[in-house]
Image (cartoon, rainbow, N blue to C red; front, top):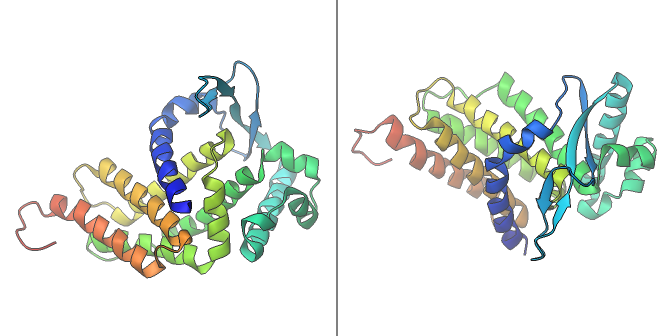
Length: 260
């Protein structure tokens, strides 16, 4: 069931990424702390229901500036949700329980997060941000770009596998189709692209953007298969390395007749 839903998500993820540029003008970005707020309001950005009626659920996703104190309190909420997910999985993340663990009022939680799925996607961005810092401060150094990409993506799989309940809870949340979750997906998409770019370094890769895009989709699918139990961190890493070799090798060595 999770894999079938994952396939549906990959299709939606592709469409979402293709339309990210169209949505972004309606999203107010700020340089200080951000909170994503969803308002179900007529006349705002529309997302079609899959009910065959042709009717639209109209929702607006905006980013509002937070004070330093609010940023700290919001971080407590995200940390509490992460702890609950890590110990008890998706079902353990109940908004009332998160409020109690973080010391933040429940009403405030709902001003910052439209749902627990929205909150868990913010946990994903926090977790991914830590990985971004790690890759940025200690990037792969192998001379071969294929080896560098493989090392970076193996690190992603190993990180996800090291906290299985948390990873499964996050993937379950990411499978939700709601405006705030889709917005966080776009941010995660950009984050994974950045990881692959770090690994590729300054190497000249023909069709680089397309290569990175396909690798990002394969990474996304591998995470879903990993948390569903269809792959281990090692097997997922092997498949990602194979994907990197197939995508990069012919471009880097177009006249090489040897085996990839």
